[in-house]
Length: 169
Image (tube, rainbow, N blue to C red; front, side, top):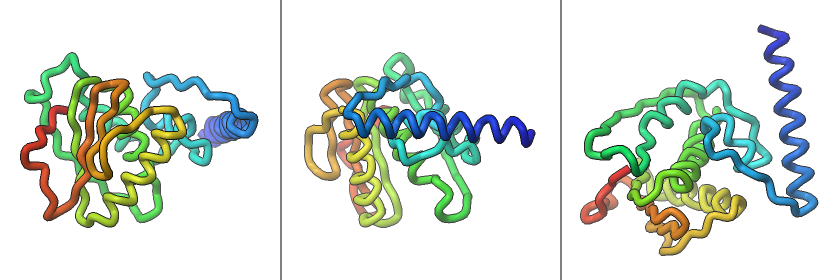
């Protein structure tokens, strides 16, 4: 197991070096959107390493991603995650949102937290990632439209409203 972990660390270091090199030279990085979200993180942000310690959370996020070929009304999940602070939960969620908006077409999504300031922070960081990978966002702060996939996401918090904004994915 130690050897496997060392090999994985070496692979991640090589990947990060390649991504940083490409970014520094202005080359675009081809993203394989079929990758699990845990493996996708370094492609979306070269500062990141794959958060393998959150692999079960990544798998749970993948399970709740509804694509346009599935009936969203038949999919309901409650997801509860407990992990210490500063372990990558929010960052993995931001990467999952980007993957969701890129790969799940014609659906509406919602993101809500306990505080609007936290929602705003996650929205800003997700926008930064979206810009970095070339996904265009239209709309206002708190309500995005993604022309490439005809998807949208509504950002809110406790006390905010999703009323009138159906969540289909």
